Image (cartoon, rainbow, N blue to C red; front, side, top):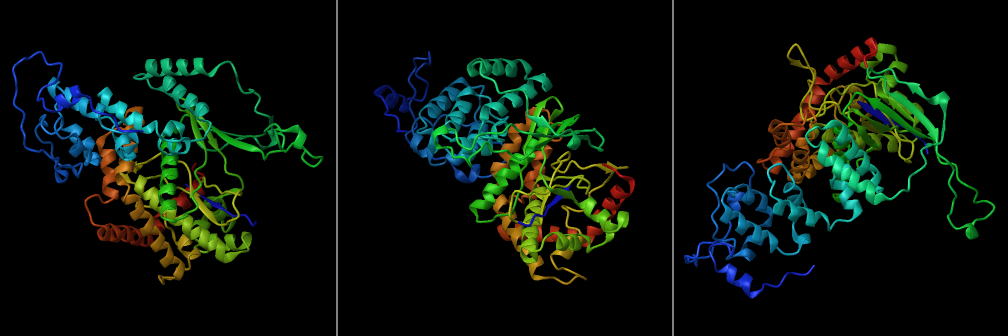
Length: 517
């Protein structure tokens, strides 16, 4: 679903003699077997080529040489630690004790790569020492970094508020973890004290509240927050610095949908945007707020001054407006006076969401619910909402997928970019260039993206519960291919969208004609 914006204006530990002696032993200090064992004096260095790919076939369990004798050598290959730990025979007590010794003397936690730490929190690693090393690495992060990577903390710097709601939704919705989450939630609340925010959200603007027309009948609610002083120091207030009146706040209250999936997608959009920003790519992403407050219940932030693609098309020709290639361009021209800025913003935002929705395999991309943002000075900002189908789990009719294109790039989008009658334009060439840059940037961080999704596999989300879903991510990111091959792959996806964009228009026409939500 797409929306358009248009506004005018630590130190290393010292080894004790006992530890040094342990380095020369081939059995644990706690072993009851008194028989001496001669250690292998030959250096053992981890083989990075054997650990480089997650698709390397499993080998026999790793032996003990190389861990106790050559801890420093092992640390040189820290990026392959997860693959090494997967090959450890965790039923062998001696091997496990040596691995624990290695992890306990690993070095400063902050030296461990963050992506590796996140991977150690996945389903493959249940050993408490392994997970403790990962947690110690995360403990070195500041709030902003934590918000980027952890779903339950991603929405706001007021971590406790969203941590409460996330755990509460797990208590209500996940029987497998209910008791554990309830204990953690109780411990958290006991530590919060008695302070509470006011339960009155403000003054509801009843004339703007409504029941929306979509299938689950969500509630659109708007209210004015209570005024807050300009400054907290009364001595610095002037006659002009009266209490400010904040903008109205809008939320959509939904019941019947698992919003944790939306939260995961929005968190990933935030992460993608940070990856692109590091590459000096500002693609005008709009990651709106979303929080699950219980089992299949939660709230979504409304983005003000928004308009759907469907509304634009209907205003330019009724149901037939879905096939009018110039409808979107003419609407933008009438609403946004700065034409060059408008098209440039549209090209960037369209490229960002084309890449993001392709990588995440988002489906059911109809035109009925699309939003815009009035907080920015830019105009023509397109963005996507509603993520009910992800990772290629698309709707099917009589066994045939409703999605015929990898992402949405319709003729009316191309018309805005100046591509008319199969003739390329400067803006369309720029669009393709931005897309390939954005795609290759995400591909360089494919391990991180796969790790973040694999951590969420035990949450019970129906479209993220198997290794097949992880395989989808690896396939679209073209793991194992060269950068040039990956670039050509994405350009081929653009060609498919350009050729078959009419199938999306037909789908949108049906939605307008039948009023499908």
